[in-house]
Image 1 (spheres, rainbow, N blue to C red):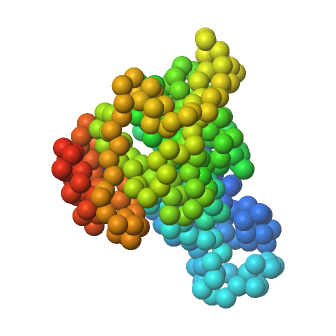
Image 2: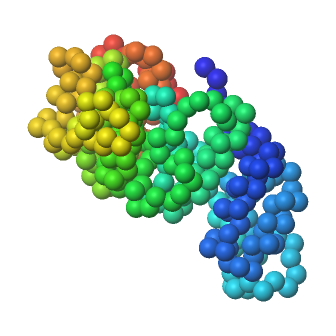
Length: 325
């Protein structure tokens, strides 16, 4: 396994003139900073090395960072020295969300919350220009056009690629039905998947993504949050065309039982659903640390937070190896 640090990838991408220009065209815009600050901000960005620029783009830029005299800018005039001219991206560390890989391609996601929407500028630049990714023959399922697709928002924490041509996608406060349907149509058009199961989630920050509600921990075993209706409403999307040709779209069927639909997608008789045996307050405490959010690295082997003692113990008792982080 190779771990790539996003700040290194971004720094290396910004060394490429075309990529740097592409990022700055979108960040130093009149809509973000007003007409009077476009050029001063652009000049600052062009004057620093790529490592410093990547830190500015992620960490933000204050008025004090801009060594300017008299500037005809309302934003500048209304700001104090410590006010942010370019807001930081504190959630950029959650790299599962602004893009995600699904079988043979990637999505560059239109994020739901304003605090995260600029993250996709960086991810798109890396995938388009960094030597590790550019011209490697994979597809963009969503977001390759560089457009803002609001309100068709989509986030990677809602995506579970479970195998056998099946993808689970949560629909809650972050991922919209429109984006799920667009994704499914693209996957079917290129024969990358055979079904997408859309799962309705509560519009609650506690369950912001599918991976806070359930995670796959073995070939046909899932862990689920215990105090949530396990038969969440769901729909199975399949290709509208037997040939799955381009533009075929999707057939949509509401499921009577979520786990039966998942079992059918995995081509197994049934799936096993594990939940921790604990009172609701203890469950909420572990859910605060995403107690159902695990990363499967091999069948029956997962990475999970060490604070979730009850959940980890339950998984171990059911034959799942938990590598505590």
